[in-house]
Length: 205
Length: 99
Image (cartoon, rainbow over all chains, first blue to last red; front, side, top):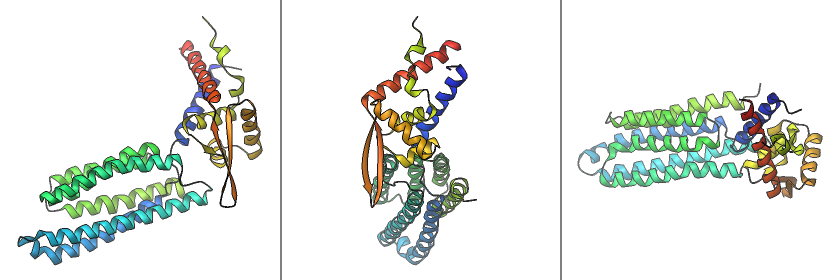
């Protein structure tokens, strides 16, 4: 009855269920793809705004460009969050699950704390005029938030976080290409990882 | 030395009951559907094992509604948490003893 093999299997089952049940598994790959597309669209808008306001910026009036880019950034963030939420909500409800679970709350908290800290840090940097640090710092704080949150959802989220951090660190040493790094990190990587996760967890054969 | 087998709880020698307690040990509440998915078990089977655990006083049931659908969630009682911990500790000791 109580053979060592059975005991090991029992412990294995316990561990598996404990880890699976304490993660939010409703996260949809399509959420990543949608957020990536929003980021690409936001980057295109930002690119044209930078071209439009470049002369003001270079002639000692950086405030105009900063304000415009702040609005673009907020708009992109809201669009990305709403579209990401939409697909995750849909997937969870279609699978008969609840969205607002304890795991979802833990996931959101673990994301929010590094992101809010990063947001305040960034606003202070803009205020002090370190514009070149904005894109790398966005990527680094976002990567840290993802790594922190990955313990409550799929492990791929943590891998994505590592790439965001690496990209941000490289960006620190390549001044003038912030928007390109930002676009790769928030646009391309989201779409790639969204695709990987969709393929692994969501695809119906 | 006392024999760890004495601490193994008969209530948990079944894979499904063990699975239910594992899920409830790390979550405040788990819904019936979530349990079904996690443990990969048929409806009738899950319901009867939940009933057993409930009768033993290891599991509490909360019945609610989400829209028009019934939504039943389960959580572990203090007694359930304690019994499960003793059971796992005993399992661990038995495995250690073999190494």
